[in-house]
Amino acid sequence: MITEKTQISILVIDPRESDHKRLRESFQTSSLPVTTTFTTSTEEGLKLLRRQNYDLIMTEHHLPHANAFQLLSETKEYYPFTPVILLSQVTETKTARDAFQKGVDDFILKEELSTTSLFDIVTNAIERRRQKEEQEEVNQRYRELAERDGLTGLYNHRFLLGALEREFMRSRRYHRPLSVLILDLDGFKAINDTCGHLEGDHVIQQVGRLLLQTVRFVDIAARYGGDEFVLLLPETGLREAQQLGLRILREIQSHPFIHEGKIFPLSASIGIAEHTIAQEQAGQLLKEADQALYQAKKTGRSKVVVSGYLKPALFRRASIKQDENKTLM
Ligand code: GH3
Ligand code: MG
Image 1 (spheres, rainbow, N blue to C red):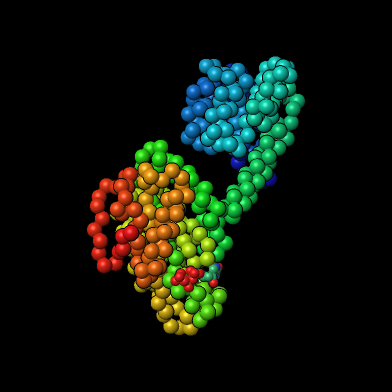
Image 2: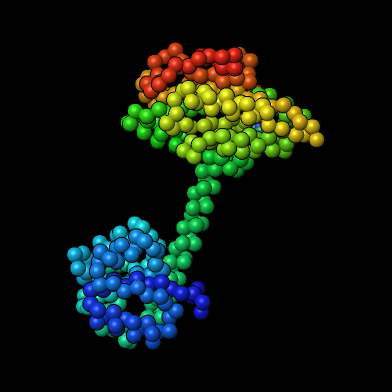
């Protein structure tokens, strides 16, 4: 919707100065609230485009050193929703058809500039842009919902499996380290039983938040299901993953989980595995981390177990010292 206060920024790229004049006059008579930038050079036009997002671009079809379609593809790359209107000298239906196929939003014949309603053309193009942006926002929200766990807002199980495949392939191709950490809360059923399911939910949410605060931007934190969480750690070898695991354990153990005004203790068990040459599929990496978690549970809980310590790890950069808090499989 264009209100009186809205200023529409328009970039016009047209090699003919005389046509700039015609357009200026058309804008004046249209009473559109516009701020126009005119250039005769394709290169200058591209520079301006990279610097600023205009509300609308109007370009002559025949540009020096390029044609408008090249400019169009650059524009759509930077600003997919910015409308582009093609200005043409000739009444070629093929040009018009090509233009629409290539993503041009409208087409104006220069000889008709004085009789066409520039107001309608510009306002329609801006309104279509607004609708496309709104639709994209809705799509983005749906995409996010489909990837997220409803309780914690972390990535969900499905997203994690896709990300694991991608990261596994990347790690394999570029010989980069990749670790997986699985965490399962200890004695969580008892919290549900004592404090109620809602309080249990609240605990899961708090753990989710603690995980998010602890990981790096590139790490992927997911709720795997129930009281189980997975961290996918690109560019992270066993040693760093183990340190992270211990830090997370300390965070959970020292976090004040409160029920009826009283702090109750909570702990977790963590299994960690690193991508090694022996693993041919992403699932094997996850499975090794899960086996390490199983060992952590079996050997007393509240600890970090690192898988593959004795196997040759592909990307291991340093040996790992054991201390009383850590268990190595
Ligand atoms: P362990 O120490 O061996 O891990 O035992 P645990 O008591 O933590 O139980 P376990 O991990 O085997 O099972 C997790 C429990 O979490 C099972 C289920 O009752 C509960 N649970 C699963 N999803 C949810 C949820 O969304 N909210 C709540 N409040 N509880 C859940
Ligand atoms: Mg548990």
